[in-house]
Image 1 (cartoon, rainbow, N blue to C red):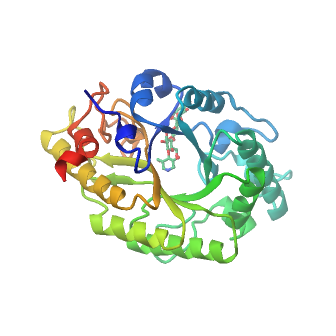
Image 2 (cartoon, rainbow, N blue to C red; image 1 turned 90 degrees about the horizontal axis):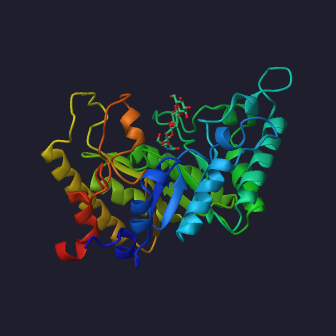
Length: 332
Ligand code: G3I
């Protein structure tokens, strides 16, 4: 028997998966068996739900929300304000020049009101603001039309609008490279500032796009402790463990090497052991997919190169990684 992952973790945190319209079909049984929370991988992003001013397209998002309800799964919202996958009209004024601050804020507000408002009571929490911290060490906030045309307070405003739209939603800031010490400190600086300004931010989303070698377990632990010290709940929102280092651009592998899978299993085991230790602050761990037959990493950073980042294989069978995280009572 293959124990349900979410049942194994019922005293710890939710186990989630990112989905799209293809995978809710092709991975339906696996999703229903092992996961009790879903995130839309792309279908709630600005360009998908609000492609033109005043025109909202919720068909795909609605289908995913409905799938979650049918299977009694929770639903997280992803994402309201991001520099990617946001259509150009949002940032453009009537004269074709960059929209001014007030116009852009008004557009942000009506977007958030409409999207978060629609799913009130069905989506329990939102990644309100995504990836605004710059990776380069000497810069704090990432340059984007949101920042450049509104100013730093676009972040606070997004959270305020989301809170108005759905006062009971748990509101997250979400980012990647979140365990890198320098970036961690920049994220903490932002979150601390928001808390001091009494901005309604309730959680930190650690994306968790990791690989076999990084981040180190010490950096993961330090990040969890640093964010938790702000009094926020934590969620791992986009977990995957690539079998390639970021700079490894090899394309010749048809199958993952045994050794990669063994290392990956070891790593999943260690990482989930840390997550369990922090179960009082971690409320959900969501994978950015469910099984190795589909992952965004098949197109990143090398287009068309297969990757095998999850705990279920291409046929939806449990990998060694699965047993390391599901059978941990035996291990330790
Ligand atoms: O849907 C179009 C299709 O019509 C078109 O023919 C095709 C040609 O490239 O592109 C398709 O869109 C792609 C889309 O995924 C759906 O597959 C986009 O090119 C591609 O850029 C897009 O990638 C998504 C990426 O966000 C965009 O930034 C990934 O699926 C998605 O997994 C990824 O998710 C992000 C999180 O939202 C935030 N954190 C990082 C994470 C990974 O990058």
